[in-house]
Image 1: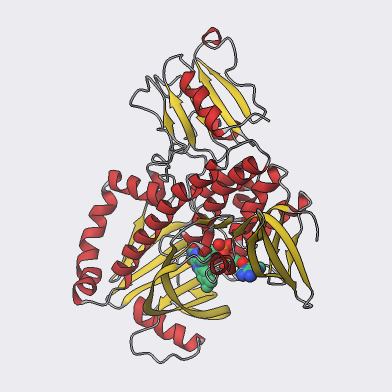
Image 2: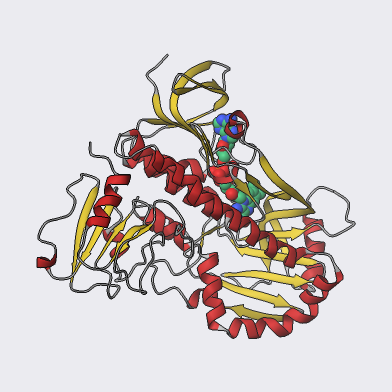
Length: 501
Ligand SMILES: Cc1cc2nc3c(=O)[nH]c(=O)nc-3n(C[C@H](O)[C@H](O)[C@H](O)COP(=O)(O)OP(=O)(O)OC[C@H]3O[C@@H](n4cnc5c(N)ncnc54)[C@H](O)[C@@H]3O)c2cc1C
């Protein structure tokens, strides 16, 4: 048997690839396996949220993604023949370098993540399936089966299940996946559509439900998603069926052709009852699945991975106590629950069949939507939620507010806003980043000389009046924030979460 690994990453979808990227940044000994021989070639999740781009920027990946995708997609709501522009990304986005929804097929996102790993000499072991995992003697003994049937046994200190909705790791760890399936069936097609305003995401709201067209670019110009009409036979997804739906729901004018990928699926809303059990962790679809409303699924998975990766890396190299790993579930499980609730509500409003909802979609929405869209405060809140910029870990044991902290600025647990512009980029390297504000003589000695803490003197231009020092975690969230010049609290925070080598 080979020497034990620190981490075995099971699954090389977007979640596993993001986790591997972060583990590689810390030189953590790990392997990443995936049972399929090739990465997904279907478009699947077409949208990347601003917070995901921020979180990936430190790995030099965000610019590649932005370069390949479209940042100028506009949203259009079609209500009984009226077309309403939805200006969602024009308010509430002053503090991010990515004030847009990036449209890029998931296959391209995975290609960029895979290419970055290859550049850093990481091989994704494809055609390699985890078929058994048993904790024994301080390690998990894992059985890996390759496509030719050959088996290998490896030992790993931690096993992370990034292996999707039917997770083997979840089953081996004995973690339940609770929730429900929605009764509706959905149809999906990547195809060409004539008659739609290009460069826009279109939502047609009707009594029967919602029909979406998202601009893809590749492998086809449009992604169409629709609910299979009630009573329609479970026939194959043909161009004829799709055209019938488009005709009914758009009242004509949209001509479909050249489908390159069609599928039908049912949606579930389920969550793992735990994100960690002993040496097993779950991330991405293995931990939560829900409707695609709002484009949250893949984004939440990538952010799970980026919350977990540095914690595993720090613990494995002896730079942090085991206790740090408990904060993964404490921080990410509430996010998963929130996303499931949010997408469930959006799904029911968009597809619910009861007469009140049907009437709301056809009669109320055309009148109310323009008023709602004019309310900039509401739109800003909606943007912060959908973009995932509002995700915070304020209740985490790893979020601490020190003395003399004034009311303004980010709170402990919030993501670090990009104010002044470029601050996120400056603090994107591996490890913690300590921000000190004020004149140089205020901090004659750097309060930490740990190799995993980079000190930044921001000078007199404190971005947040009254905040004098803040510690930014490796995932871009504020771990500690305080005013005044007493560093006792900061030192205690560092002593708790960062062990000397
Ligand atoms: C048809 C479709 C449309 C979608 N549309 C959207 C959308 O519009 N918006 C959105 O946000 N999301 C959408 N999603 C969901 C999105 O694709 C997922 O949220 C995302 O892929 C989750 O990434 P993941 O890495 O967690 O899991 P996955 O992408 O499922 O990757 C899991 C990987 O684990 C591997 N694996 C499984 N078991 C094992 C094992 N035992 N050993 C080794 N490897 C294993 C699999 O081969 C797979 O590559 C869609 C999904 C589908 C299928």
